[in-house]
Length: 330
Image 1 (cartoon, rainbow, N blue to C red):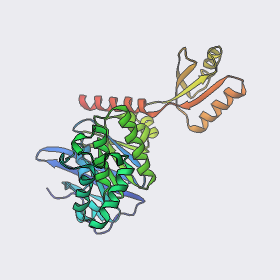
Image 2 (cartoon, rainbow, N blue to C red):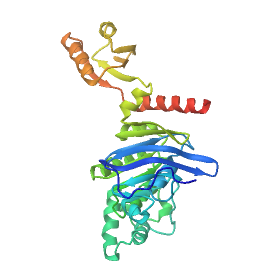
Image 3 (cartoon, rainbow, N blue to C red):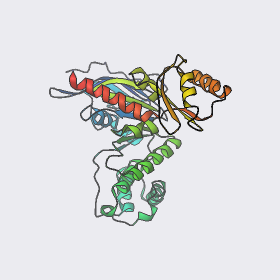
């Protein structure tokens, strides 16, 4: 079938570093992606969420110039991916879900090998390898055989491999899969460090709490179609995941009074309490309204210790479960 979008020779005018236009991918009669339109702003940590088979890996492989879309176009800065794949692969670092390692190489040899594949001059490789091992906190494992590394260390080594040519964009497919909690925290901090270095990072993951804590924006994909995209708060609110606020008091003595006050606030709903001085409620207003509610509580002398929106992870998980359940029933 012919490409549904006529080829163009100029990049779209946009502040986004990646622009995906009407992208579809078919394998015989199976639609892996259906008419995806998405923009990725420069410098963001962008999460791709979806169940197995949703099309996340296919989309990442298209962005990495490893697959050609059946229709549509992908622009990375001024370059259209299918026209200049070799240029794109210099701009992009791709870390697949199932990565290949060479067990008979040391960590340093492994990175040197990939530096050679990327055409980095031999005289520069040693310095790059040293810097990358330090960045991913594997300097002490420089001479260790790859096969002796833990799962978390192998993940960090493969992330270093994706960075060996200093790409502007990182594509990470399920990078936290199989990691223990400590290794996940280390990976999350490393991703934030890379964002601080100016990298734009796309992450595919089922670990929704990690994405909510780490990502600036998310896109939800179901059955190869884009459901919604945007920042975490907007996405969860728009899809019915009500925003929540947590209020902790100095003691339990005034919980009843505070609950009574909140019940008269139009934007507060479904108030619950526990015995640990904590009040939780759904909230339908904006940040300015939250500030007014807090100011009123303090003005009236209620012993508020903390007052903050609930972390987005649990709410994002609720939204994801609702979407996937609807998709399975369709």
